[in-house]
Image 1 (tube, helix red, strand yellow):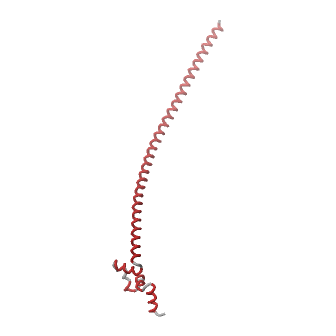
Image 2 (spheres, rainbow, N blue to C red):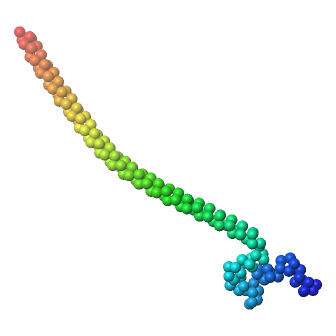
Image 3 (cartoon, one colour):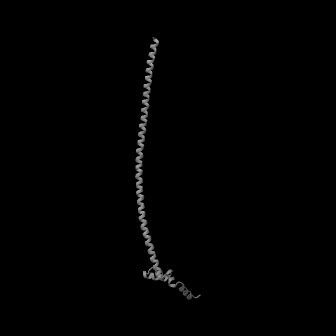
Length: 157
């Protein structure tokens, strides 16, 4: 094959200028796209992609970017709201926990006090019963003594 025919065939399929824009080779072509102005860059891409396709893609990407930025703004606001809710909930939980601990301490103190009062009441009741039992025993002994005295008097007669 002839190199001239190969070049013509490449120009026919993709164009040699396009190939030079996509593959950097040699010292003269390496900076062409990197140093191109906006108009030159659009013109170079125009040989690869039609201007109308380029504009549709550009507009679509702007629209997508705008939608995603809006979603991001909404998501950030939602995140801030939820973080605030979590913080308020944590604060309420911690306050409830403190109130519970205060209540628990008060309850335990009352239980201790009531337990002591109960034990004191049981001790007092037991002491009172013991006193009543002693009194009853004394009364029985007194009655027995009177009965024994009366029996002696009857027997002595």
